[in-house]
Image (cartoon, rainbow, N blue to C red; front, side, top):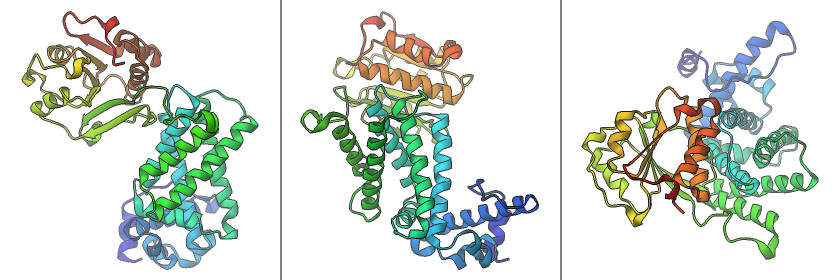
Length: 385
């Protein structure tokens, strides 16, 4: 075994666990393990050097698997990289299962799904360009694997479109979602060839979705039913960042590293911030009081997993309302409550109504999502719209 293969094997189970089942029970586990190592090696090589770096001989050397075994499972590197794409879809499905794409309309949800899908695949550009090139190769032998990928992608997009209901798609929905897949993949090929940037891929899908939904005559300029997206700044270290699965045209989220109290004070008075979301310890006692409200709008802070009465009371001396939960509320539930809160706020609900909707979204855990307002604040009269 080569040094690289030994290092990979010593690292333990890799990225993928969905192996190809063996025909015999005795060899099933071994074949799954070998397939996983082959896929892990392909990812490693593609991330390092893109499509050109994924040579089956190097995959065999890196994975510690015989070259003949690699060829038994994958007839070409295009076939192998489509296998990687299939495994990426497994991971995507798991993430969406934990945090479904949300939004008030099917149009916004499906745009949000393709935005999430694009973010997910493009987070590692070299690997993404390699799998896109393989999918676009036109190799006839890969058509069956590619068809399965598109079928699974259709299922996920339809789940986002219907928003949790369980029914079969109509003929019109099937045509629309299949066409959006083709628009998305075409735009992604443009991204892979440096013709478009990442955001342009999402814009093209959003424009196509608006056109299919409203028609040419009534097509709106933007895929929103609101004046502007809610602008949220999330302050957290890397471990404190959760998952908010809302369309970017509904909620625009800016991530910033953990800030000092001076930095937090500066964020609180920014005109382009609707909500400041904090994840992690905050020395609120050092925050100045009586901060000037930007443009007369309410100042809102959401505490993600770090809510306490003492912290909320200190922050309420500087802002209009503090909402959130402590570590006793699971992160996925906190994300769900935050999503419901943001959808309500962008719709124009009062802070009182938005808080009630956030609590309703987490059912029996509602008592964990708390609120502290500044003295004299009238929550029924405060809104961002």
